Length: 248
Image (tube, rainbow, N blue to C red; front, side, top):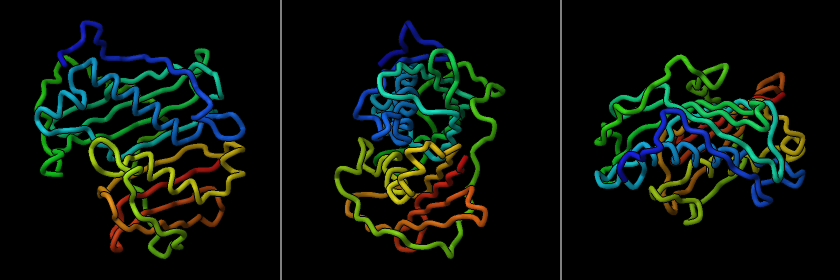
């Protein structure tokens, strides 16, 4: 699609929280929070002419490599949230995108995301084939207090679950969707901590893609003061994904 006449380098989009996106306490699931952030990023790429449809002409797609989310509070059922997004940096095959979520003008979530251009046939990163110079970049305008980082993995961690990748885990790029990794790990968190909204922030590193029928192992470890929990997902003893949860 061509660049929209309504294109702006900072996009704001409203979403109403529906009941399918909520936990039993009526507040937004952490997984659906990530979905809304990703959908807003996709909407911005669409009006800017670098959407999945545009990129597929060159067998390309954006894939998420790292993500940090900082949460003050979660929206609840029937809240209308505004998600704002802009790009901090964009060059060759990599981009850093910022996102913020607001309710009634109050910022409740900030996120920093790191994306790579991925060739969906060759299954490897490559330079973006589309023009992007019309995007104004905002390197100093940050959405989080801390940037994303490389998660340190404890290799003596406990294996908590084994899983086979099913069709329902895959997305349009034909690999496990980034939110699925988070969902698999959160299923092994004490549900009381989720219901009480005790997650202050979390970070995700995506290292290797997973495909249909892959067999994986989910591992968990917690630091001594119980303020941080770390999960990793391995295939054939190689780490594909890491998640770090920080508790309030």
